[in-house]
Length: 117
Image (cartoon, rainbow, N blue to C red; front, side, top):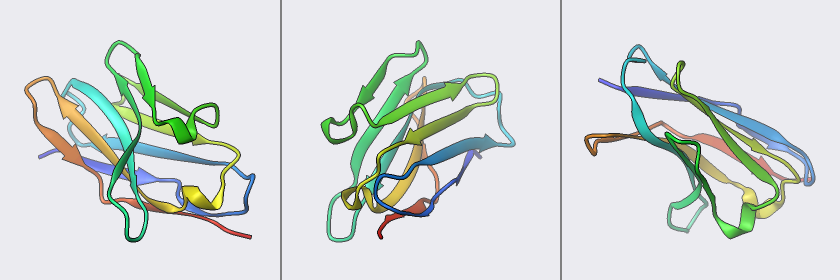
């Protein structure tokens, strides 16, 4: 069973930065095709924030372009999200997702990010 463990959320002031990390625990032999971060704000649908495939190609939703950066470590099966210049609109629960080459998808439990003064 694959388990994704997220860390790095918290409370930050507008303009601040946070770095989220996600690690696939106890099963780093799986070669994930793509790993990414989603977020869900209260009363809103979960949305894709950023994704990175095995070859390093990245995707960002428009609202975070130029502020967020996604990276991954294949050997450790980790994916990170560096978030800079945060705004209150970035407040949400952030979820890590990893997809295998066979089409299976796994989710983390979520980590809260709150941007407030």
